[in-house]
Length: 192
Image (spheres, rainbow, N blue to C red):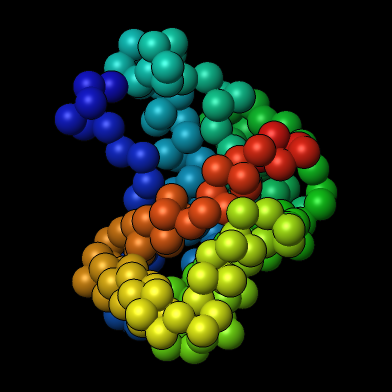
């Protein structure tokens, strides 16, 4: 895909129920999401077969795509929808990604972005075990100027997220990229 048309991250929203104009029921929303995800994967793979979408200079493959779900049951629904469109899929794990150390760290960062004036949340977001984040936390202790600068920086991440409703991931990505532990995070034992 040409660089100008590349999309790395997007957020989809569900429309209201067409008949009633009210938000969809949970079951209706789940079905709509599953169908939309399966259709988008099929579209991407079809475009890759036509040479329209590449990843690192090679056509996109099914193995390059991951769908993260909260439960095994949701994964089964996505697998069934993909199968109906002729797209094969596999389940790599039944373990919840929401209980992983990386998910917990992301939760700490998002919480600090949402409430940057709470010093304890900022320090928790900056700290990761004995890694490089410890020096960032130490720098905040007793240094009002550094603390206020950090509060302002996280406040900017929050404002960016509120202004960019179509891309709320951007401020979190910015916060993670500027954290001292961001590179350390990449070098975890499992390579994630």
